Amino acid sequence: MDDDAVFKALADPTRRKLLDKLYTTGGLTQGQLEEGLGMTRFGVAKHLSILEEANLVITQRSGRQKLHYLNAVPIRRIHDRWIDKYTAHQSSALLDPQKNLEEEES
Image (cartoon, rainbow, N blue to C red; front, side, top):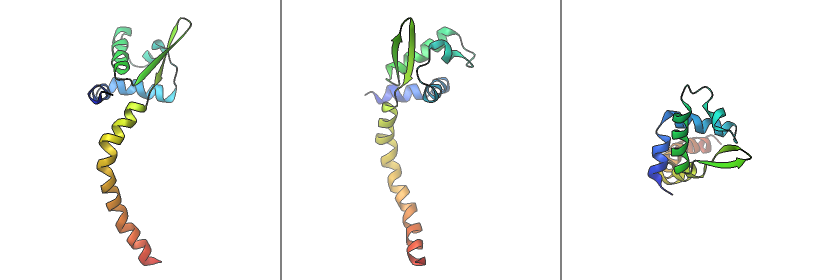
């Protein structure tokens, strides 16, 4: 997995909107993804291409239509590699005083 490609793909607000749409409703055509974006078909196609290169969007042919689906695995890998390990210590440090207070009250 190429972390740089995932970060690059997630850096753009339009691509995040496309991912949000696919999170809500998978199996959308490019035309359905274009709705409400105010972009040309070519512009949306370019964003989808970047998302596909980062493996964040997978496609499946259904007859003449090309359906797009969210692939959340690269996002989860980024979370596990870059976010979780840095927040685990801080979270436990915040929970320890609360746990100590609760034990004192018992």
